[in-house]
Length: 145
Ligand code: AMP
Image 1 (cartoon, rainbow, N blue to C red):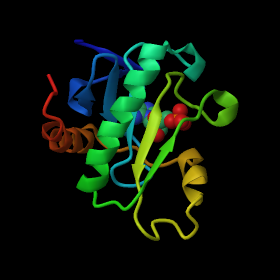
Image 2 (image 1 turned 120 degrees about the vertical axis):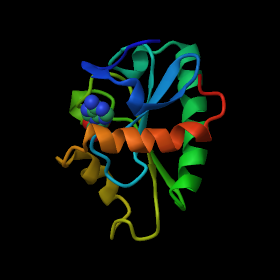
Image 3 (image 1 turned 45 degrees about the vertical axis):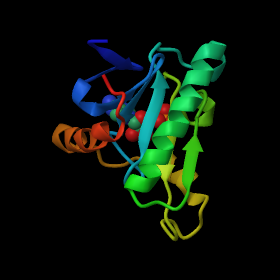
């Protein structure tokens, strides 16, 4: 897998920190909280219903592995998993992806504010910031090729 498209965006290998047979995880351009990452199928398909059973299985097993590591690494105490499936559900990148967000006590005054935060415009990080984070996360996944 030399190039990877997240929707219409060409993603650099330096932004990717996890790969399985059918899924890829990347650091986020505009994280809502530290450790907010994305896992998506390798195949560029917009909607959850477009996935095959094998892809669903691989995607969620990947999300389980990634979230366990991410929660510990960012010293979280809980996780938010979210899929915005379709434009009317707030999806802005037309490629199925699970948001994985480590949670900490009082990271938002009201827990569910995380959902409006996902919707809000946020500053983009630099490529260097994203690379540094992916470099830090990659060794935590021993089977990364
Ligand atoms: P959604 O609005 O649910 O489709 O989520 C899109 C997510 O993709 C947001 O968390 C964005 O910050 C993130 N995002 C958008 N473009 C990129 C990119 N080029 N690289 C990494 N993350 C991105």
